[in-house]
Length: 163
Image (cartoon, rainbow, N blue to C red; front, side, top):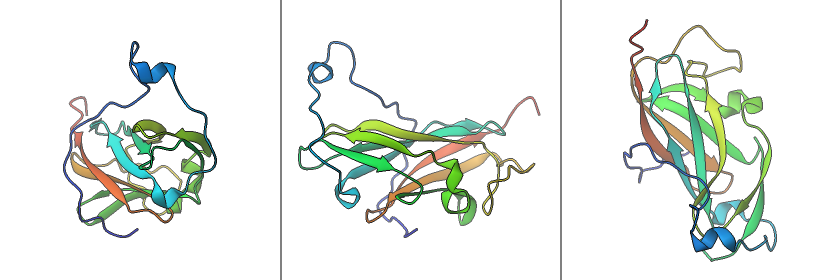
């Protein structure tokens, strides 16, 4: 995955559908066709984690041209990874079954449309869960749609006080 140089540190972010009472929630145009993955705006959102518990990594997508389109998210279309500094902790390339195929609708307003769970373990080269948990510290969740620019966001794994 190419390095994304414009990444910034960001805190936990909540995503999801429009809030009740929001006019956008009542009017949702149907997709007019398939999305061009390379043209979508992508953002990675992730909550901080506790050592050994993992977290959910979400993808917020939107269309820059005001259109509404459909996208079949598959392991061939999406590449993701978790890193800490130069250390690869987990990557979808080594575990394509870790990403579920899902059809999503992408609209002009950025919404959380896809997510996957990371189990908090260090498994850079396989799908098999290991006994090695990710140590407390700073991590990056990265994602790229084929043909698009990789995006990433910073999160932290806190020490489990019960260990």
